[in-house]
Image 1 (cartoon, rainbow, N blue to C red):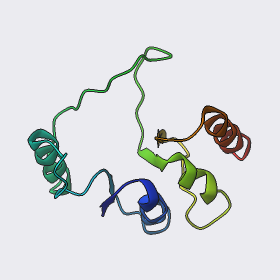
Image 2 (cartoon, rainbow, N blue to C red):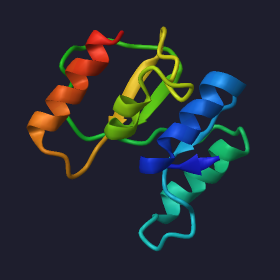
Image 3 (cartoon, helix red, strand yellow):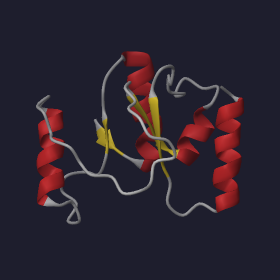
Length: 117
């Protein structure tokens, strides 16, 4: 299963309740998906090594982290707390995707996720 944003609930449910892996990403027929990204995504779906994708940004701390990668759209993750769609983040690396949310709303959601455990 591949999806992002509003599909976060479904992807988290598959991981938490069925133990299935999924991909947080765009559908392959989108015109803005690069050839490299499409090849990496197809390799991942076949269970093959997909190579490393570079990430932009600045780390808050140095080091290495290992664990399952779990997450998705912040608004969807926030609304999943206490439901069957709440992802299991024990020992996981949490990733969050959000694009058009006000900074105060992002802060509120992150604080709520932290306080909810």
